[in-house]
Image (cartoon, rainbow, N blue to C red; front, top):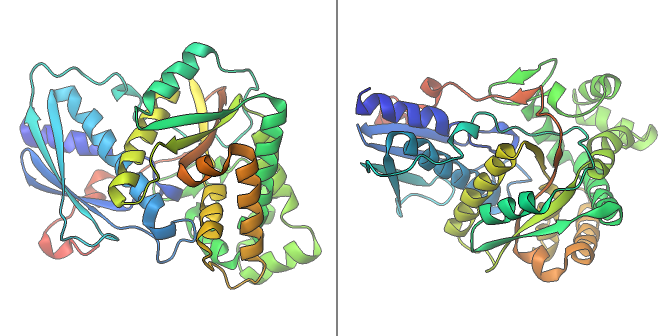
Length: 364
């Protein structure tokens, strides 16, 4: 296998990194046999969940960590240079590979393509101490996991998610995001979320599909037919109770720069791959973190007058649940449990679609 073949194989595995709503906000450029570049583009301009581009930056980190893990199969060590002249919203990272014959294959390599999101209920069986220790080691020395075990804590977290979902489902800005990222009547999707992976029953899914035709339909269902209740129960409250635990990934120092969030993404990916290695399943729970930060910064994020007050309530509840400092320094949140992997999932665009053919195509 030539160096070029190896590099393509590394990038082919790298593209399986997670990104918000399967947006895959990156393109690859092969510059030399052991030199590539990642051209990132965040979604802050059109996605209410990508506050200041931080969600995309975490995804960039997950991508870079996945590439580093993939490179280890060939004994290649990755070093990364961020092109400082590139805009923060469109960062470029140079990837330099060096052959290291004694480099061990990363034990997480075989789990890159097997990692999935499980949005359906999981077993409530508790994690054992060995599993907890492995997960805490995965996030490294600069982050900690705050656990919410037991029925009382899971109920409080599920109620937080339930209320956060009401805001999520009644925002016109969120509606535009949801309408663009769901692929209907699909088990798999290369560039979206298939509806069969959402976690709702067939009837609720059909109603959601009908409602997503226009904001007017969503608004009518929400106002007169309690349209948020079924999806909130099925996608937030019941799954929030049906798991082993919820967790918060907290930085020891408040994240401020893009590099801070990229490092968080690298550790998050190692956490998620370790979850898969342990035979567990996971679902991210991001919206409470996003709405809490909008409230903390006092930023208006919707044309709906109720949105800011609802975000403040979510922040207050989250502070009561995990503490003010943990709330401010959290970079990721999720639920975890035993059970089979999801049978419906997001796939990825083929590598050839993610490769930039020439310099003129780099303005993605």
